[in-house]
Length: 110
Length: 115
Image 1 (cartoon, rainbow over the protein chains, first blue to last red):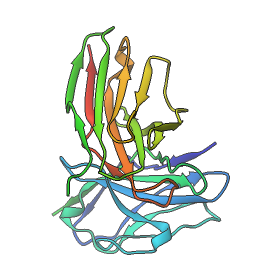
Image 2 (cartoon, one colour):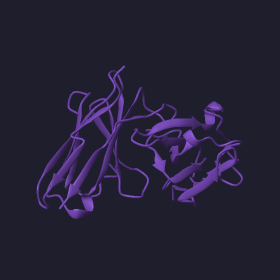
Image 3 (spheres, rainbow over the protein chains, first blue to last red):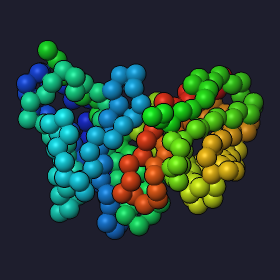
Image 4 (tube, chains in turn brown, red):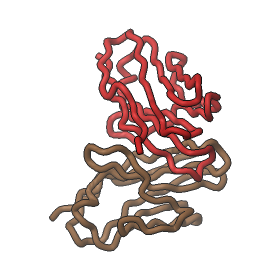
């Protein structure tokens, strides 16, 4: 079965603390992994994808095929990082439809 | 430039009514997706178009759901005889081409409430 699991519904940290939002997946094939973010009153937007290996807004994510994980990390959280984060996957050979996790709300306290 | 737009932004329907939700993708985008997002959940795939062809409708929950994109641009998602379980945010996304490598750009969503 194709599935994305985000075990934490809410993650609350203080400003300046490290952040790790967990994502595990199950997929038979070669998936593309993404993190999407939704800030308050804004639309869902792409944060980063594993294939580009970029660091966006200080966030990074490494695909670990052995553990089937794609955790999102940032060394020092900022208040403006407070948002809903969704991990998602897509099959390389399919249409591009995304399978999303349930989402994790990140709350960064001052 | 203009992003993906959706209308209406909010829709309240009585149980049993038909509704039509519109999506205007980014101009030139080949791929168009519809997702359903129930409260507290992540978006779930409904259907996919490549230009005017509906290539995947595996996520449509019942035959009450119907989608079209007749000229390969604007798309409409229609729900017949709405039920309370249809209450959700309906998201439309478009991307430049097919395949999973291309970024999907999302619209603001239509929040449907069935009373």
